[in-house]
Length: 470
Ligand code: AMP
Ligand code: ZN
Image 1 (spheres, rainbow, N blue to C red):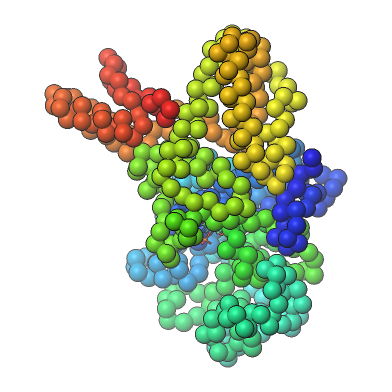
Image 2 (image 1 turned 45 degrees about the vertical axis):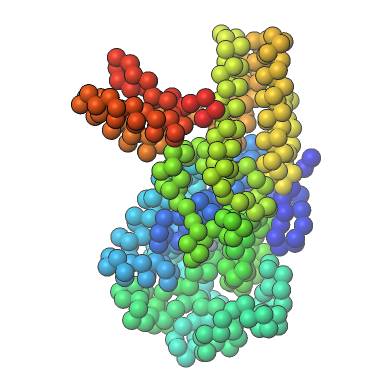
């Protein structure tokens, strides 16, 4: 089956073909975090979906060049820095660092570039784009000195989110709190400086101010990837107004089709509601790790549902993830035992278990792909029970798993996977044993066990292993 994705623009499943059919290179732009606080695991659902998409494209022989921006200036970052009484760059830096650490724990492949909106190179590009839009009659400076996009002059406005402008007015999608605008849907490209912004400002032909969020992405995307991009991703909440605005700005300036495939992932929910900072119903990765789960388990829990379906986050779901990974780990151990010294790492049979990649070809059908993986585990385990799987076959399945794992990245990586909470309790237990407080030491062993880990004492100190099924 050909590789196909659901394109939000056409609302259809479309066969994927890169812009340049003679090459295997693909450009991909993914909207990154606004660094005013730690990203929550809802954000990471979107980034893990993008990671899966990239890895599957690579499995199919494409070379993916991915850019993920960091929004380090907007209303929220400015407000946060003010409250913390810190310079904006220092304030956002800590959340950039935390973001990269979380990505690593979740095994998200690093993007090729992480541009920051406040980099002068992109500010210059934003100013150049806004000037071009004004020259073309697509933008205007209002009495409040801010510059707005004139959406009525861009005929394709609304094509991505699938609405027409009159609807925008009647449904009140956009709050009319800016009276200087010609149309309530006109959005800010350049926000004139006001006192609330403190020392956050850049000079521009329209006076001091700062860019609007939407123009940041248009500028960074076109600067780094060119005027036409193969794939642009984000969560569904980005469709309107953010991505609609990105199209209006980029195409308004270049006259070229900005993006070929718009691919959006559904939300991570909590009790049926979107996980969001504003609703206060969110968990960060640290919250999840503090409960004794690992980055690997979190990755699995966020990965396992098709991207076009909402995914409800529950602790039971985390336990199921742990159980599923335990099955994979147990299966790999058995295969290795069966293969013994017959493991031939080079003998990769591309025909074996193709159902896995075929499922992903079909709009990244991860539940189909995982379904096939667990069927394979069940069948090969049964064959091993009956002594009907020989060493060469076991070796072939191990090599198949290597292929699968390049896309899923779920194989255990031992030490680094020990959650912080478990390490902390283990350290406390070492202290308790030194103090010969064996009651406390046993109590700590139980607490560690409750987090899914077994601690054994050896002459070299404590040894930690995952409990069966963990
Ligand atoms: P933000 O930092 O709010 O700009 O969001 C960063 C990315 O996370 C965007 O692609 C959002 O669409 C996505 N996102 C935000 N909340 C969720 C959620 N609950 N589930 C999935 N994706 C989300
Ligand atoms: Zn964006």
